[in-house]
Length: 167
Ligand SMILES: [Zn+2]
Image (cartoon, rainbow, N blue to C red):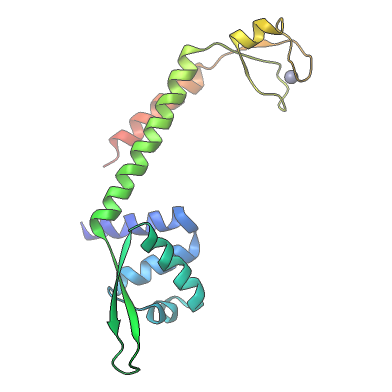
């Protein structure tokens, strides 16, 4: 359970901002309730970089910050902690969004016939568009051919099933 959770936050961090985010997320998980400075020294990142990442994660509710008094120096610092439920929720939401997008694309591919001139710089046309231009590409003027999108449809179906079956 613990390992899954760690993977999730680190994975999200990587999606949001790459290496710096991953380092901060790992440092935070290794040492719950760390301060900006503690994370900076654990990761070797600049304090400003660490703060930028932390504020971003905080803004997305993936971590929480508790304001506490630094007893040695007398000023206030934040202690940061990952938010477990938020991390799980974030992943679920991302998954749902992605599946929704893939479903829309799948429906679009299934419901339309597509035509293309085989020129890689030109976009695909729908059947309706192809008729309007008498089966000539409106960009380059070449003849439009029917596009076989069966492989794409299969790939989209596979992707949707794959994401849904992930734990
Ligand atoms: Zn063309």
